Length: 151
Image 1 (cartoon, rainbow, N blue to C red):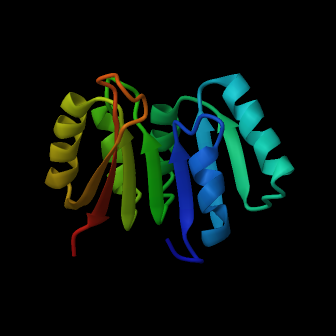
Image 2: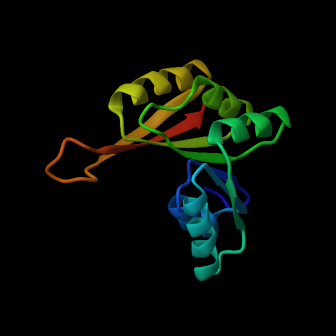
């Protein structure tokens, strides 16, 4: 991430990932459909004195499509995918926004594989996949994937 990056944190929950990145980028926009999560994200923003982050209540799929239709861009997109994976429309809208980097957090390896294929078809190359054991002694794990726009 770079100092002049505009970051979108989709399915942001309480804003953890966006807030961690906030001091490394120009701006953070987070979106999640859960009102209480966004209220907590806004609280976390104030508590940590982060001035370049804003969080919005909304359906991430719809918001990304609206932003893409308005020809808005984002340098970096972080998406914590639902277990069902990312909708094809979300991926298409994200690609239209031309992020240099896409960080995909997945809790479902099956949908992750399908979604990575869609990104590949849209000129995004998977650079790294890091599995994290978020619930030791269970089969659950999270994968963090970094995708970069191909030249």
